[in-house]
Image (cartoon, rainbow, N blue to C red):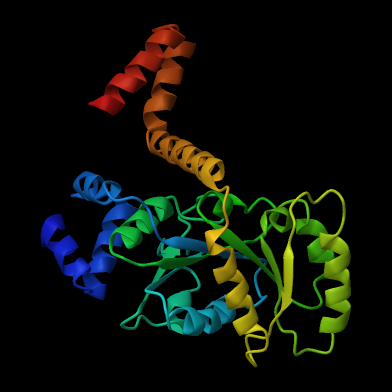
Length: 299
């Protein structure tokens, strides 16, 4: 396999296959990972990250496909689609990339959650940094979004699109305390369906409740017919240059780093368990266990 420096040079020239190899290095934390991170971290993250979330079956992938047509006219666009992990292969279960293909101006990548909670893949942050380094001006991220605790996308996105569809009254109630609260844009997809009128009324009532401190922008779209897509794209672009994001960005970066540090520690489960057993057996103290864990991780 080529050296990381060679892959980076090739990726900078636009080679989609080598971009994929670099993302795989990040996902697996394989050889060259540290060198790659040092390289891409030198450049400030400048890609505009739009998170797309919502329950399964609302048409997130179809909506992304429509939006990509609009955004790719002016943007160098990357799309990361997080899918549930296959219990057999460990890879992406749904393979959403089959619905979207990379082109000269769009790079598409599917990632499996690999058992991570929160609806995302732990390699997402570094992958976004890589895409930013390679000059992608916008990155859309589709999370698994299966329930109200799938809110990790908040820590990686500049703006979040919450996608819902008609006939989801009970599910709206279930997620309003979690996912609904993080959305900047609440999108009612499948607006061409007759039930959309009732769904719109339910959603407007939900997003206006006092408990939801965040102000939402609401729009009806149809990924099937294209209705409202241009309007939604315009709203997302208009929100791009909003001021006052400094502290929010710092908090998100801090939270992201915290989660990734915990992920590294999780890979040392056997070490932690072994030290815990030694403490229980009174072979070492808790303080000695902590020192031992830190020393082994450092080595």
